[in-house]
Image (cartoon, rainbow, N blue to C red):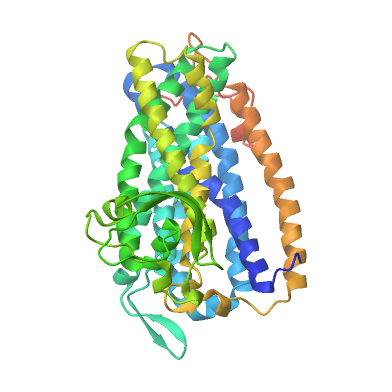
Length: 478
């Protein structure tokens, strides 16, 4: 198929499914915490704008959560179908870690999700808020276990290899491997930033169309405060993550930098742009700044960054891909910081909600967080190659014994089904976003509780785009 081998098709198939899947958990993580903040502010201030925003975003959260669960199941099966040799080699570690994620995170989320979505006028305020918080906590716990498993594959420790299989000997070392803290913080923060720009773009869309109300303004204001504070924090976390990667995966850093060889006594330059050529072992058309690579990556002007020619050709990641995926991620991150600073300046001059150039930029930046997450994951996973478990098992040794015909057919089927199924779901979610939050200021809330009329829950009723629950609120009891 297109001159590709079975191994390459298996990698493309997994990359395609994981790229689709990661978009939904990222928004789920951010929206769950956002909903907890909204409900907490409503309980504290009793301002209806927070309640209106909670009902609006809970519908979108429900659709996004469902698509995340469905897309995640496919990936779990692929470990057994396309990567059976990897499962045989490392399943004693990755299997339990993913099981812990189900037992501690998914069960927690599923248990409280029903109360959160359908219990607004059926349970007390305290219980409902607790349920929302537990769902948010569940998304963080899920991130913890998934990143523990993936980070172990990047920087494995706490194990022994017996009879060709990995055997865990120290679970604390397995879980808290050297790259895990940095990767966990980097991913969780990325989810918060991506959600902030998703929310901010939604508000900008409505303001540009003349729909200016307190709920829309509050959406934009909260999103921009998050961008202003968290985007620079993410840059700092990324710097620490880069230093950790330089220590444990120097070939990945060399590929990211497109840096091929060092000259004695000279600090490493930073290549801003260029075209790495893996065959010619050079970066063509490069624009570089002398010594800046050493300053950024080693925090000194006398240390050199490892070069690609220091590694055997078969051990080098594809610099052509990770060089640009990394720059896409960093470039979008710089734009996010710029948007946050611009919002602060406009806020001080009372033009945050009326500056059309700013609102258009915020609108176009809506998917930037998700694109940056994808670019970051491409950098991380392609930069790990040719290893599936770094230093222990090569990707070529992990794939199942399938023909390129089988993998080609299933890849085409995945593409067709995913775009049809999740495209429909994303379209419905965007329709909810376009409707915007419904204002209930001045309306009488429903008290709920025993003896009150209820509407039976039905599939996707949590994402009902009408105003059935817009005025609903928890009863006064706890």
